[in-house]
Image (cartoon, rainbow over all chains, first blue to last red; front, side, top):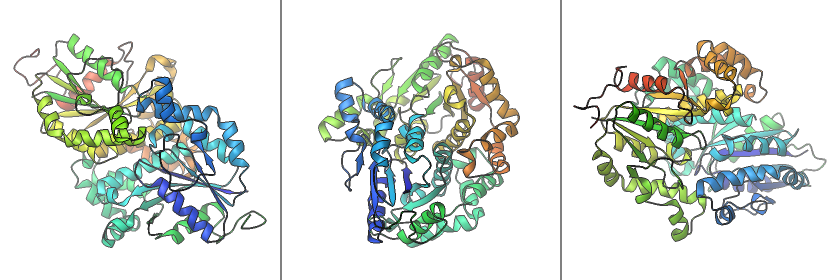
Length: 261
Length: 261
């Protein structure tokens, strides 16, 4: 039984780059890995997908043939993909791999916050063990209230997708190290972040510092894994976090008779 | 000084329909009202915008001239709109109206969860009094874990936009009344919702019932206003909620020398 890894995050958070780097990492460590592209609107991919949503439906084609605008085409494309979910599942389930990475649409909203996205994920995963990764761009996260907002969005997405979810801080090569340590420190001591958020005029309209802290204590109860997908930094930690979810922490463990199928 | 109303919500939550109905309601009550369309990708509008983002940038044109896909075009269009924010502001600030409604892009993600959307809102609103409305489709909300997810998303968005935010339950003509009462009851007694969410396999992976309740107590501390924009139901309550934010609750009050400019 392969393990499934679902890659989630807002547009530009680095989903496709991470999916590709994670595949390289797993292959380099002797694991056979497949990637499923679930984005019917993506134009360029850094990896060669083993299963590709664009062979089922194309957002660009929908614009041309159905007279839809870009917004409508993105939504319709995901809905149409869901209509062909049994064919898609058959193709995905025929893959022989230790790990199957599901790379989700560029814009998370058309996928996670509508009915069809979670149906696609549920059907493809079935009874397989799985983890979802929620990507947060470190440049965006370097403002405390943005990070608070991203953690709320991660929780909102987790409730929709319903998998054990790992928050991942992406593009860490793009900021000084002290910013990364600062963000990691929030997970050790949420009062640091709560104080900063409460001092941000925008974020403090809704709640007092003590209320922000109460919410944050839940949101930071899980760790965040810093990675750079271009420099392959942090992938040992990311892999360990995934393994803790799908295989109880065993290193490079797979339930297949052979690691390399 | 006009009051500003920002309409937010995921794709399909009813933003454009509500903006149009709210304008009708305000005009019917003697208030002069203008609508600003901030969506560079919308194809059809039910109202005639007083200021239109599409005169500054068109997502469809960007696809054609820049060779972008639908995803990239939506993002680039909002970013390009931000580059022309001073012109846009000048046009908006020249409007003579008691209320100015800002209708935001179809997909919230390209707007609320990137840098440019909040900059556009901040600049357009300036020192004016303003409220944001976060729309939640009642059909979507009728599953308890979806509603929990929507409240988390609303909070995440509020932190980004930084205005006093009112949650609005839209399309209430599409479900039986008992579903609406059920959702309203969560705001009187969050334990009802917490129990339901904890019983949902998807939502309960992350937190225990007591942890869900702790989060929910913060999220439901503000009310939710049920409306139907097609049948103009609930608009008195919606208007009253907006007035409590912008004018301290005074009925049909405006800071202009005349109600109808």
